[in-house]
Length: 317
Ligand code: RIB
Ligand code: CA
Image (cartoon, rainbow, N blue to C red; front, side, top):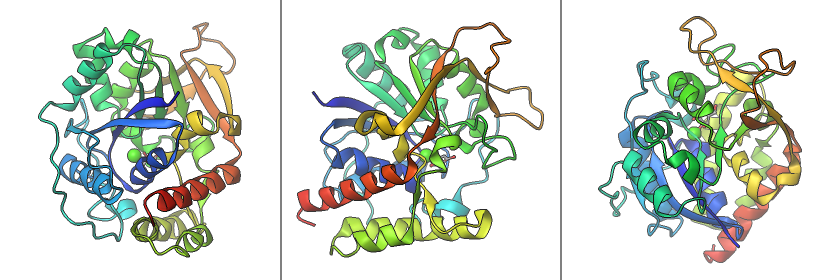
């Protein structure tokens, strides 16, 4: 039985790679995308979502546009340094011919989950603004979402947008606080695991042995991302942050998951957006999520490359 999922997303290069991995995986049925401001503006994120689905021959998948600003803080300058001014690196995807659904992402999420309770999972790979407002507007979705898998946070790891905080959570820490304490069954995929999943230029060259727009997209989308990682993080490659969330479906054996009480600092100081797990159980609160504290990173990257090759063969390259 395929796992039916909706992805809430701020595409972003690694977001786009997640869409492709979902489309390439027989275990998954991608039901819809909902877009949110994050790596780029909401307008760019929504355009990118439509364009990548079209490039992958999946324009039939609905896209609903969501929130353009975090709940409280101002939007991040932008993720252009990592994802390029378009949000899609050095790619040059044509403007999409398909349109978004008219329903706002918050209402779209509420409608879909209430219509089929416990049948669909939500994968949140951008700031949690849409998810938090959907919970506040219609608390019943807490019981209707089968599972919420979040790419976000830094537990024992340092941050990537501040010394302590990871981008998605730091971008809307108040939304993360609402979601973390909502009662939804959550699996958190933090930097502790995602930084161990480095797609290398050799992996990209292997894909480009196949003459395909998908291989070229992966090459051009990741080129700037890899330049950023070499310049600022000192290693050749780029982390498959968002795609790793799908390992919960396609390769759960690669993840080391532990149940912990996890929260996020919203105090407004230097550690705002920092996620922390109560390893010593001093807060005496029940665990509110499963957390991926480790992963067999290279195995996951190999699986990602194999699935891209599979997608290209399915699409006739
Ligand atoms: O910190 C990594 C996360 O921030 C990923 O979701 C990436 O797309 C950016 O949004
Ligand atoms: Ca993202």
